Structures are given as structure tokens and as C-alpha cells.
Length: 263
Image (cartoon, rainbow, N blue to C red; front, side, top):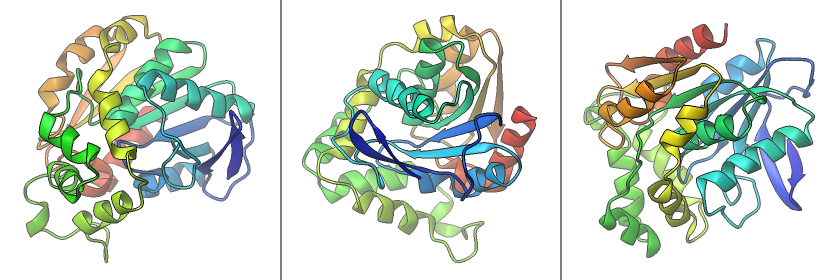
């Protein structure tokens, strides 16, 4: 679906279904440098099982017009602007990595608009190393390599993708290669600078589910501990075999957890 948000072209995958404001809605928000296709299995399932689905491309990602937004707060406001444009009053927001910070901030800013949130591969604070930031600033290939290698469990190069015919490293690198210069750096800066996590957690009124990869080296599960303790209605699930890229490394397990949470 193509639409206009704040005068800029924006895209959201809807599983080829029209949006019906009377239905329950799920918005999927990708991580740094990625796009809506990161949620392929999960978004398609809910779209064909009675939900409005909006797997978004944040500004300057995928099919959405730039420039990239500079802060997690601005991205949370953008998600609400998209929902408002489609007359969706309430939604569950599912975010991955940077997208999980966006989901958290969205629920804190718009408590009457968030039905539930699912936070996949989250840590707070979500600090980014100087080497990673510098490589991204220079648009150096090593930044894409760092995101790809650190973004998967160590066993990934030696094991097959659970989706036949897909290569996890190659799939991630292909997405990153489509970025305009500066976009990954802007995303990483936003993650690194976000300081509102605990304040947002304290304001949360809706249920929150943490889905964490036990082998995640980019946002290790221990990095979510303070948030889990700070949210009244929280539950956490660890997927033993997965790293940071849960939707690719453990797609069925991730989907099963979301189905239970949204039931």
C-alpha cells in the first residue's frame, strides 16, 4: 500500500488485503537499515487470519521516501501518523531491534492507541559501538558486514536457513545494499541516543511481550532486564536457538509466540 505521511510517500505491506478499521490491527516495525520484508512470514500469517496488517517501511527504507527520521521519538510519531491516516484507532505494534524501541515509545506516547506491544530483540540502552557508527558514517561495507554477522547467531554460517532456498547472510546484505548513503548511520545514531526507555516503560498501560534470542550478541537478553522489570504487564520468552534475527533464524517459533500473544 502506498500512501502519504507528512507530505512524503510511504509504503506498508498489507498482505494484499484492504484495510478495515473495524478489524484488529497489527503494525510491524523493522530494525535499523531493514524494511517491511523482514516480517515476511509473520505479517503474511496475520494478514490472512483476520487482522489488518501494516508491515511498514520507515522513511528512507524500502519503498518509503526519505530522508530518514533522526530519533526514536520521531519514528514513533510517524507510526501513529500512518495509523491515523488509515483511521485505525488502536493497534498492536510489533517491533524488532530499533523497531522495538519505536514500539515502546509509541505505546508510552499514545497509551489509548496501543492494544499490545511485542518487543523482539530489544536491549536498553541500545548503545552502538564507535567502530560500527564510524563505518556506517563512512558508508563502508564493513558496517553492513558488522550488522549481518552480529545480527545472527554464531552457528548461522554453518547451518541451513529454515526457509528453503534462502541464505540468511545474503538476505540481510541484499536489504542493506539498497539503502541510500547515510540511512544506516542515522538509524544507529537514533538507537544510540534514545534515553527514554525506562520513562516509557513506567508509563505503559498495555501488555508487553519480550521475544529474545538466547544467542543474541547484538542485543543480549540480559540487556532487556531493566525494561522487563519496569513494565507492569510484561512477559518474556527466550528462543534458545536464535540470535538477533529471530524472524529469519526461528521464523515459526517467533510466529507461534506472536499468535499466542495476540489470541
